[in-house]
Length: 246
Image 1 (tube, one colour):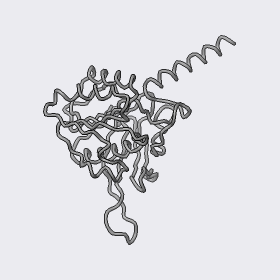
Image 2 (spheres, rainbow, N blue to C red):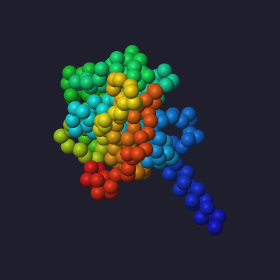
Image 3 (cartoon, helix red, strand yellow):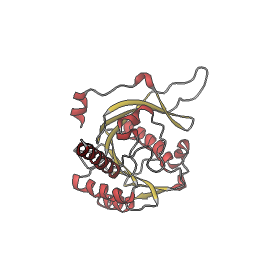
Image 4 (cartoon, rainbow, N blue to C red):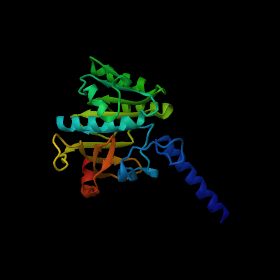
């Protein structure tokens, strides 16, 4: 009986260490960042969004790319709370820096690296992910191989920097060494009765796959400087859909 208990405790300890290396930590590990993602965070092991890991975002079109950029800005606002900086790398930058203020980010805290050649992009991303002084690295990259993604994952395992790969209209989607794969789509905002202008940014957030977690779909909006969950539209993705997209 004692041996069985010790074996169970050892397995649990090993599982926790493996999850920690992959960016999944318990609420008691270090200072837990509050992203305000609501039920979406339950999709991750330990119900914590994995920092110190690489996440992949797929945007098949321009509308999805713009929505993804906004969603990422909301995530960066939390990651950069301790006055750390972020590096944003691309060959064709699409973000409008002053617009980051909507998400509580001062544009001068982001280092934009605009490259002329696609072949230089992944090397630059890997080097940036090795820098422990950064909060996060965002890379607008179209194509990436499994081998290349493994190099990025090894970099963040040492530095604990969070990496976001935003892949706009990639030629092919294959499994790579990332903790999760997302697809963000814009949905119509709603105006408050009697109020002019436009409503809050809203997104259909599809977590297509997550390592050791549960895929699903949720709707969020950005209001009053934080994410807000829209419960009436939330749903779990059908298993057939997850298999098709994964």
